[in-house]
Length: 321
Image 1 (spheres, rainbow, N blue to C red):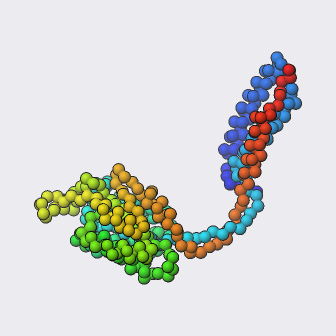
Image 2 (image 1 turned 45 degrees about the vertical axis):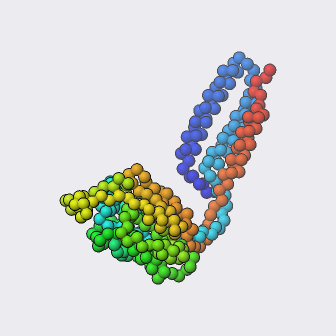
Image 3 (image 1 turned 90 degrees about the vertical axis):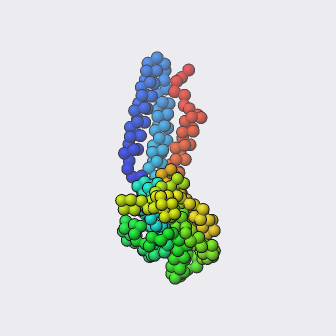
């Protein structure tokens, strides 16, 4: 017999507590027996009944498994590109310690949730580059995440369409199964100086690629650090202010059957993003047969409940009148 919860320390403590409480119950009847005539054999039957269904409850709680059976386990996988905006506006500190540093921290946890999927990394600003191709090796991906900074790409504005076009071309180049699950997680503050993704979202949708967008920043925004100073807006000759602009991010998500989420100190929707991606049905990459034991706790629980109900509905008379 196999037990689902082989640590019996909790069951032992429950048995001790039951024994102490029932000992107090018996002592009460002992005191009553000094004044009234108590039927001892009926008291023994009541003790036997209660002890039996309490023991059955403990066995059910331990989860006994009797017998084994073979079960088919299907292995599913997804292909997911993570596209990260590395324009200088991602150094803004409206999210502590900065937008980029916060994203790097959150992505390390997100990546661990998809250990059975192939993940790739695209970095972009005005251009997009493959930082890490699709891989199952999470150690390699984590190393690339650690090295992210805003000096890895040209600092000439932001073009949100660039990483989407890059992801589309890479997915199409590796296409081996039309039904393969493909997704893109697009992470940016939403500032887009190209605004030319109209036809691209239709191509992504036709290819079955869902884009989940994550807006990083706040409506109030902040200045943009650079070295020991700030980036200056040449039009006003004042420190430039970067704010979250979710419009295009929401539009891209809606046009590709994805969803839009936000990340700031006040709004933290990373768990919702993970759940949305997990709901995307992965492609069956293989299957294997495993030996599974059948948990039979229900039978012990049912018997215990039956005896407990009998104890309540048809109590034994322990005092003769």
